[in-house]
Image (cartoon, rainbow, N blue to C red):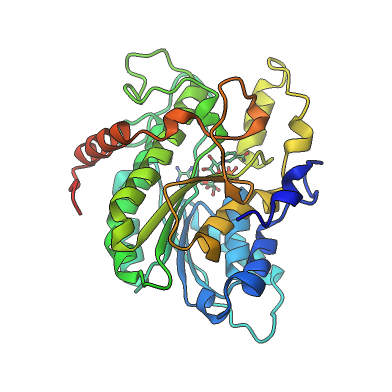
Length: 348
Ligand SMILES: NC(=O)c1ccc[n+]([C@@H]2O[C@H](COP(=O)([O-])OP(=O)(O)OC[C@H]3O[C@@H](n4cnc5c(N)ncnc54)[C@H](OP(=O)(O)O)[C@@H]3O)[C@@H](O)[C@H]2O)c1
């Protein structure tokens, strides 16, 4: 697990010694997965691969030879991303690369989520890995709603991914094997411990709206979701983890920085801590394929290893998860409430 500890010991900004997603793939093919053909037998679903971390995740996983399904609200943009991915990977040792398929999925709409899940189930005979990567990050006030009337961070980041996962769980279970358990990877953020969260009022109907709190609430819920899934489905062959990718200048972060630049002093370590998008996708790819994580789950990963519980006075650049991010009672309640909201069965 500590293969990348030295590379993360000092930080010098994007492109420094910290590994990229492609580096993780190369290492896994060389050291982790002795039968290199088995990664190419995987089917992987990735939400939001049109830009940023999702794009880099797809590019690296494509290089394994796995079958990829990427979801996107803008399928033309997804096809452009695929063209870039395919032309960027040079063939290695006769490795066979499989066509990447696009599934149209507007995460602002639960009807679109159900339709897209049906489409995936029709086209993917097996699903070994689900990467819940897509993310909305609305910083504007007043709050914006999804088509189903949910606060947008909550609706897109958490509720839409919950529904997708729920609908794909039976296929993930059926695709699991004793040598390779199916995996679910939820993209969270260290922000879950930096801003007040409002799980009791996630649509901000009673609480004054604060965009960063809305984002943090949705990302805390994704950690709870992964913890619940791992606790209840690990004995059925499904492992689930949450990931903090680091701080990466993707379109998402650019919007945030542009908005806050005049108001907030950036921490001194901010520039050093920043990763490139290629590095930002490394922990996701590690979570998806690392052999050392086989049969592990219910954990929070960052910097390609287990994250640590953060002391309360730790700053934004110090990483780590909040102690309250692991709470069985809250996780159980959230699962029940979300199933009720979506009208899906609590017991699968
Ligand atoms: N960047 C960071 O520093 C950072 C830090 C912590 C966690 N994260 C997490 O990492 C994940 C990826 O973020 P990123 O930085 O790579 O952001 P990004 O470049 O803005 O990518 C976000 C992806 O989500 C898709 N998406 C957003 N809203 C959608 C919707 N309503 N329906 C369908 N797709 C939608 C986007 O599609 P379009 O191309 O159509 O917009 C895009 O593919 C997110 O979950 C984010 O919360 C990022």
